[in-house]
Length: 508
Image 1 (cartoon, rainbow, N blue to C red):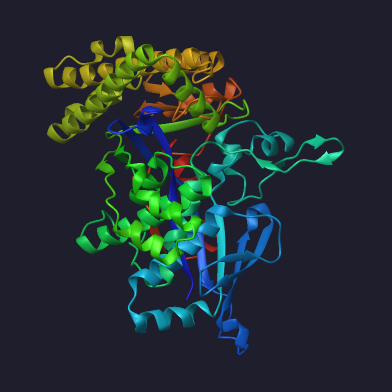
Image 2: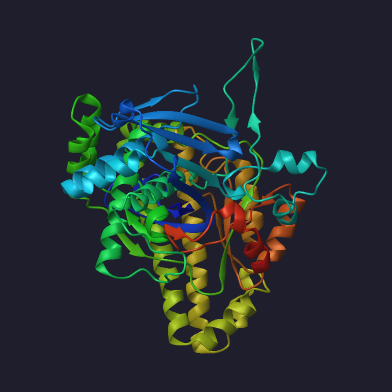
């Protein structure tokens, strides 16, 4: 009866800030870092207590956090009450309420009766995130290990997370978890929504062995996962974000244009007296006008992420500062956004060109990528004597120029808004990285700041980047692009040790 679903973390390569407003696009890559949700019945059979027909029990376990929360779920109005802990997980709470509401809004009466019987057996939900979502720098240093990906890979899968606890007036403040910026809340919410929807029979998820996702039924089921996950994530956050992180968690790597925020108005009404079932029914029928197009890195390119150990940044406060600057200086902000948008489009175009050139003539493409992977970018033209090879080099250099323009305009925006979108320390690291052999791109993903940096490398050159990063006290994470979106897994990941570590080291 157990259902295991997983959803990937993300890296927003282009579209930082711009993706908040339609019709600006962002390129978001899904990764091999995945969040897992395991859903099974809490009891083998329905308890005979008469009161249980009005309420059912829900247990939420997060082994990495050392937390277990018990809830009561009202089968009448779908209200959720925590009965055992002051710790709350709003993402999982809204995911649960909205999934059950979606089932009630979708099912006919016979199916609703079956749903009630299934819910009366209780729900046992376990959430697990791959190590790549969290910073284990302190644990590695505490063990006296070098800051290398090998040290990271030596940690057991789903290692317990250390909390950053600070003393304040003799009292311990609420613990905070150090993250790497891969979108853990979006991946977790999506995994929980998907697992619950599949468990309750609302959708049929594709399995990890499905290959490319095709077919109207699969697409329609994924759309339901997407709508419920976006709704739960936005309401839990208390704001309607762009949604690129949830979209990539559901569908995988893509070019993304956000949905109109109005589609969530009925869900927002659920907190103001509208019954949850009615509100979610309306959300499912709403005109979700987001756009997504398949997109992934061209062949023989590797995504790398490095954690500089600077403590991370608060994305909401940075977004707030940019919006304030836009209002105070509309002319200059519009000009910067226009240049940034043009550079984003140019990078997208050059990467698409590279993928097309690989399709047209894979031999010349491979030859050129291998040659360019061994030298710095200013020598790439020397490595391409043939016309087909020169086409590849032109597209590579075009992509580099576009990335440099993106970084320049992101810095301008940060300086004007008074926030460190690409701080000086990150600029030095990114310049050093882009000047290495075989490095195509380097930048700050998403909103920027002091979170992880990313690089895209050619051929086998990634191993050299990892070594240099380590010498600069930058921890290379075990993260690579994996274009897969949400999927049904065959086993509990703790039994099969599903983790990106082994494959990442193999790639390296």
